[in-house]
Image 1 (tube, helix red, strand yellow):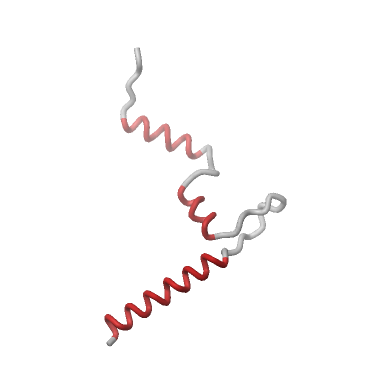
Image 2 (cartoon, rainbow, N blue to C red; image 1 turned 90 degrees about the vertical axis):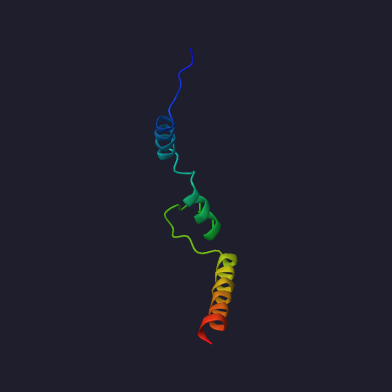
Amino acid sequence: MQKHFTPDETRTWFAEHMKHRPDYGIGKAVLDLMLQPRSPFNPKKRRRFRPAFLYAAAWLGASVSVFAYFNFAR
């Protein structure tokens, strides 16, 4: 006979499984989009921002600033 699992048991199992897999996760995916790839020869080296991310952040900041100026500051 099959054993039925409760949602809490499933959530606990999944959280425990993900703790043993540090290469997965939404935080890791976001950091990989923002930062340059890790060096396989020097994994402790600090990662720099990707230029495309910096351009996108600058455009977003400028757009929000222009929107706020023309809608709220005038």
